[in-house]
Length: 314
Image 1 (cartoon, rainbow, N blue to C red):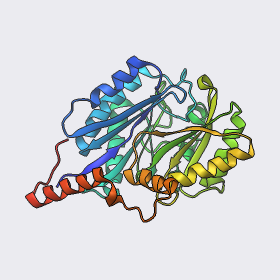
Image 2 (image 1 turned 90 degrees about the vertical axis):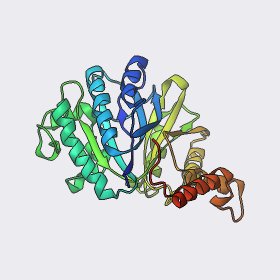
Image 3 (image 1 turned 135 degrees about the horizontal axis):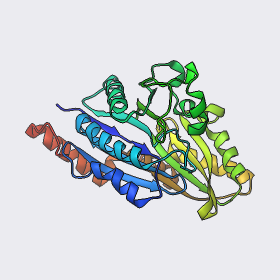
């Protein structure tokens, strides 16, 4: 039985189409994994890619895409709403099938070494792959972003886990790790007052005493005349989407502001949407098995098991 992982690399480019195409190119038409989704955001100036498949071919393609990103993204001139320390900002490995979290930790560590040896970009390990207790949180490693890390990387407490204590001259550093599935979820507010978004983000995120398993920052969407509460739901089962939306709606009302829209950035499990659908529709006794599309997928999986099919074509 082969291992199946998800990998969601984040690149610091969301505006230049030719660079985005160059980064995505190595992920297309490859055996052993699938490119499920990629989304570029101009305000964040960030590209998020979703890959699912076998570890080795994913890592080979990642090195090719990362080499292109290093050659074409300069953090010294990069501007965008999303925090970042590198051209390839973060690469998480997520276990899906026939691999446990410790297996993804080993992948992260071995890939971090390959990454530095090939590209010369220093590496920090985070979440389950962290080598220091204080580095589990991505926000801790990215404190002050690229601009501050340029001067503070020489401090022992900010030395990278792989590589010399100096940033790549244009590509910065990269954070690589192993984690569980998370949902990138944005709530856009009908106001240009960035302070409102920041105050709501402060109220909802776990680190400020808000909802557990929720991370959040406030950002300006200047081209659209909106602001955004940009969130990571680290465990959508503990705090589902509907609870997050209603919390933000309640806080926004204090400021006389409404929610214009919400966004899912990347991919999410069907159960996360079903929970919120059941809540808003007030469905009594609703079960996942009532969704015919999912029931058909379950039937197909059972048929594969009965016929002895061990793998899926990717």
